[in-house]
Length: 291
Image (cartoon, rainbow, N blue to C red; front, side):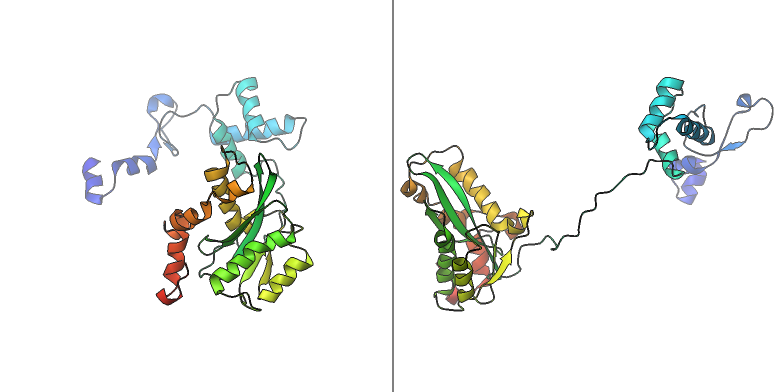
């Protein structure tokens, strides 16, 4: 057999795994040894047909409905005493459609494809706010505007009152920084993504956004990942300068200067380990580079 398999270019293990096996005459004293197919090794006392009949009988004898292969395995193995494997019972019940039916959750189709990163800058910006505790001023608000293309922080504002005016401040900073003007229609063609917070639904915020030419892009309710750009920035902010540290007041928190270091040094895998500023510069000619 070794010479034959070598001539055929066939591994001997493959041949022995697929070739029909013959039981020795001592196992069947009354007649010729038949060919046996299946896995190699010692044969179980119950073949698949006999085990299938035991499974059907167990399901019929059970006073309950909708039981799965684990219950059948437990009764056959520990109550009746048949040494059978659970995976084998699962295979037979699956092949003969004996598994218990199960309900699948009816989840509506998502309204988006799950991709929030844009292929070019100034296509979509995101803005949101977070609260940070200080010992003297109490809770402070930090509002931020992030570019979805390169995760760059385009504007940020720390304040004690998180109203509609404070929420729009980082957006105004971003417009002045990227487009160099605060005139009407300066940001035409840019989507401004935000959630349904009270600051962002006010007439002031929406009116200022329309005046600058933004296209509103609301994050989906119950899906914060649609505003994942700014959410990921706040995670980095809290891990780097908030958690484990204590700030006294607004001035001390604003002087932490995390944003400048973040834009220059923070490297992201989705940007091929470039910083946000390096990625933005790669999209723009040298004459249009901003500070």
